[in-house]
Image (cartoon, rainbow, N blue to C red; front, side, top):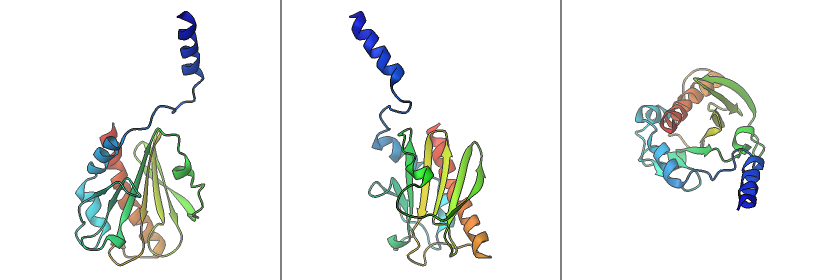
Length: 169
């Protein structure tokens, strides 16, 4: 029996950090529901439809009657998946500019146009990635120069991440 305890102890000491099982769907659903209406409403020109949970993203928001203009929200907690934060995937995200968020790091990619192509916020080992789909006219694009509009929209998106971070604590 002492040998088994020694093996288990060695395994726990040698196991990489963050190798614990990631949270289940119930945790992500709770976090999506924690996003406040006051942070969703300014993203769209029309009232937002009810939240969509699951599917190709953890949660998604769209204007009523136009699901093509949605904002997808991907949440990753302690799963060791750095791909969302580093963007080493096959989709180019342009130049990232740093934004500040209390106790978190944030950045956004801008590929031209009036909106960011992606917004990331990271708090500890928790990543919140938002991707506004730019297929239609339902997204509320801020006025001003394109780069300033993208920065303003990125800050609006970060409000959603702040809600999720607060609910996770």
